[in-house]
Amino acid sequence: MRRHLLTASCMLALTAGMANAQVVLNRGNDTDPSTLDHHRTSTVAESRLMNDLYEGLVTKAADGSTIPGVAESWDISEDGLVYTFHFRDDAKWSNGEPVTASDFVYAYRRLMTPETAAPYANMLFPIANAEAIASGEAAADTLGAVAVDDKTLQITLGVATPYFLELLTHQTGLPINAASVEQYGDSFTQPGNLVTNGAYQLTSFTPNDKIVMSKNSNFHDAANVQIDTINYIPFEDRSACLRRFEAGEVQICSDVPTEQMDYLEANLSAELHVVPYLGTYYLPVKGEEGSPLRDPRVRQAISMVIDRDFIASEVWRETMLPGYSLVPPGIVNYVDGGVMLPYAEDDLLDREDAAKALLEEAGVAPGSLTVKLRFNTSENHRNTMAAVSDMLSNIGINGELEEVEGATYFTYLQQGGMYDIARAGWIGDYNDPQNFLFLFQSDVMFNYPRWTNADYDAAMDAAAVETDLAARAELLAKAETILLEEVPIIPILYYSSRALVSQSVSGYEDNLMDDHLTRWLSVN
Image (cartoon, rainbow, N blue to C red; front, side, top):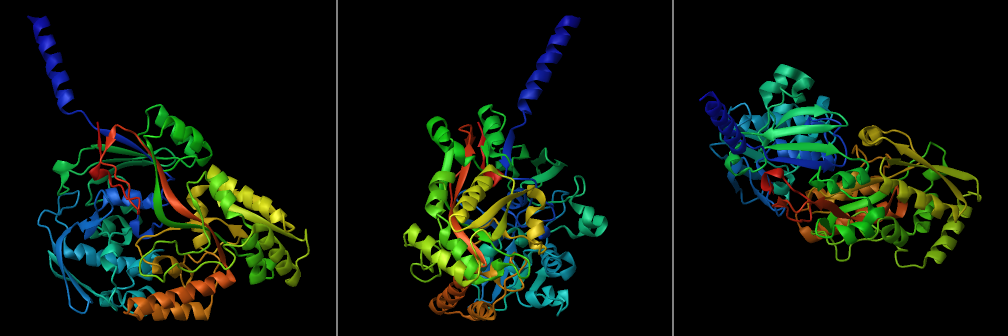
């Protein structure tokens, strides 16, 4: 009888275990986040985490399109200036409390408060008074975001912005739980403290190991969320992610080692996703005061001698395209054909001759200039900079590689750190040239070379208030023309997104913005 009972108990335990089997997804991410305070984030790797932890007024569908989020509907005034959002009744925080319009007002005011030092605050500068608040010229409570009641948020813009809804899908548009911020201060992002309203909540964060998220049972669409636990694992070494992918330990790699593209195409073609992506890979150029790099002629010479076709085909194995502009091709709201560097179609040998002439004109003798080529840890970036170094040697410039660990790399650049030539990239947060060109306005943190040009700023300011799209496109093109004449940044490649996705994962849809919220995925 006792044996019978034991067997029955075991069967019950087994059955219960099967019923409660946890579905776990191991996702490779490019790197660890520098913070989980979404007002202080800036990278694509961080945005992936935020999109699983939070939901904004609007959000992204599996195909990348913009769909209702916390707001189930909205009204837009005829002049395009006033947006009134109506919240769903079942929007809740992970602690069970309702998400209210005041949560968004609090978040947007905090985002604009200078003390927050949000690198991406300018994303929501279209909101009335936002820029004045961010510059300390106006009080936070003058922001054009008002809670009409708990379920109604009204946002007033300073100028009509055709892409405003898409802006709200960015992490700067996400809400924040005021009570937890007030209670814990900067520690509100710690596991146990962080209160989120997305499909997932934070369980643990072990730097250089993994970030664990668990399904948020209070999420309004929790019944359709198939994955119980996500382990976000940082892989600055893309080859390491590939090895664990093949071992079945990781189901998604957010990037791949491009030097192994032949192997990937031969052995993992069904799992390999290479699709167009709205982004540009470029080289900011700075140099100490008095450095020849401060001379536009020297920067132009460096740009001329870079063989973009070779880097795209041999280094990135055709997972990137040669790039001769900051604004990538195919973008909407721009002039036909875009704006390109004038030598984009010239023969490389002719460009080298022209580059040598420019250096001579600038007084830079062969062998007299040595530049450090700074990049964040990644074999793809290392190979790119090694190729650039070789190309510079063709015009008598010496290049030295300078590798920096990923978590601090962009913080250093944003804070105005000194360097000669760095590597950087920008992925469009929304489909409009302004999202690339604003980077090099004088007062923007992402202006890594700290380049200033009054005519450029004037063109961008004029575009910001121009409501005629054709006239606006001409102003933006004028700004890019100025940028490409002085090349404080040298565009060299256009992006494609590259990922490995296990065939056991369903719901992964390729899209131009490379958005893949875990709530849409499942593991078979």
